[in-house]
Image (cartoon, helix red, strand yellow):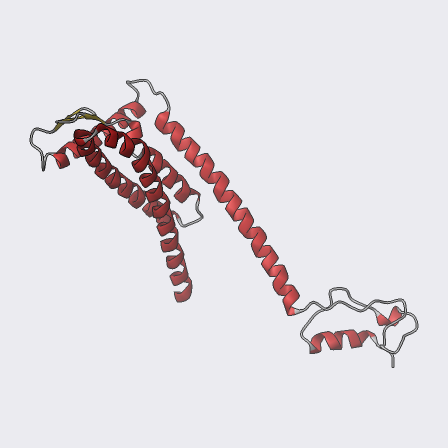
Amino acid sequence: MTATCDDVWVVALRYGHLPVTVCDPCRAGPRDRSGLASNQTACVLPSTAMRDSVERSKTRRSGRYASLRFLVVGVVLAGSLYTLIYYPYPPVSLPAEALTRYLEFNAAATASIVSLVEDGVRARGTVVWGRFPLRVVLDCAALDAIAVFAAAVLAFPAPWRKTLTGVVLGASLLVILNLGRLVTLYFAGRADRELFDLLHEEVFQLVLVAAAVGAFARWTVWVQRREDRACATS
């Protein structure tokens, strides 16, 4: 029995596959008992598992590219935001004025909260005056944590409305947490200077970074759920 040109396609169609390499039995030499020419190797028919393997390989490559893009864009954005925050602006420039107003806001909000439990506390400029004078500087304003969070959100592939929502809500959360930090530091400094140094230099730095990472993770979950819900209803 010899294989014809149509035999290959009949087998392929019967098992739902297409040949990777089209074998042409009509041009082959003498056949053996299996119907294959002596100078011809068996046709390779791609299986479902093979196609799935190709798709998984493409998915992995796409995932690696997306991860690399997110990392590169995030690092560039974070570096740019850090530069904008800590650049030595002239005192009369608009960026310096904006940063000063933000620090004064933190000092005034801290003094208002502390005054609820302690009389005579007030804010002048960026200093909280009371039983423990506390000056609010850039390192105490959570701007570094906000920069990291904003860079991660902006680098993440998501619709611009969800990105804007994430940046606004996440930054607001970090500002509120930082106000709690400043109030705690005021009372810690009034009670024990060593405790103040420990909280200021070690504990709260990690707390704000962890809060930024947690807020970003929660935002990505929210974005994914909204996308899945939109796909399910479409």
